[in-house]
Image (cartoon, rainbow, N blue to C red; front, side):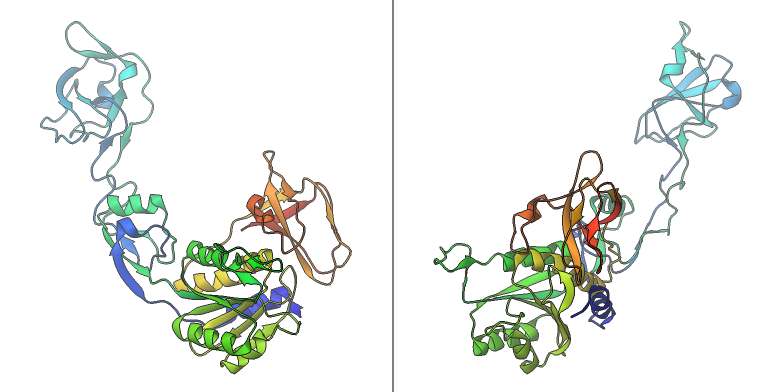
Length: 392
């Protein structure tokens, strides 16, 4: 085994393929990674804009009764310039007419019998959004590496960028091994189990920004496993094979990896769960051998595979990490491995360990928000102790 920190350093430091770009409609870009900068073709706001309903006027005239010379709804170009003791009725988003340097909110005005208005309160600020105060024509509004969110799509729409360049998605090949496995739609035998790992990993890949190919279940047969692995290595940027990486009689996956041309950089990590994790490189792809237990494979994907996908995409994604007090303490007997403790967030802002029976306890992940780590050599975390919680 090697320390988890060393394993992560090897994984993230390994040279990998940088994905090329493709151009897509901005409406299809949600969760994609921006390859090239998005540049505005306009000022935002594009004109001096009323920030509320009211009357556009001159500050120097606010102590006088004012004549209303025009009504300016949103989308209308003013015809009149504001002169001495004049104002224009204006709606939120309307173009502020020339000569005006403030908008008086309706609530601070009184309509007089003469048709004029009188200011009845103190006007604070200008209530005008100035042209280009948010964005200037030619400004970069979104930088490469950004994972695109709904608000970013709004920015693209506002700045006229309807086709954008994003990173192509890396392909991840998913293989599960084990003669005990059957597909989810099948009824397992008394000694069998449904294959949950593959479907979990496929959708973790989607969330991370990649796309996946599923190669099915490879039974405990070296020739079958070798054939499937060779095919996956030739067709993908990353290959994940789960199960068969421990020390049992049927755990021959590491030797099959080497036969397939994979250079194994480590096999065994001092982390619980996830000890059998294996990592290697091939001329066509990067390969991860993850444990067959579903909690182990889930966590090690998040901690090791996802950073590689992000690196290939050129993504600036970082996991959310919070400093929180522990709602309850945790303890353990053996400290030779770093421990990953699944926790949920409580309404009072604390980290509460979830009920967790070990690396096969898949349903524990349903309530899990993040993980807390116990370093090698550490036996306990006390109740109330401040810990770092990494979202998964």
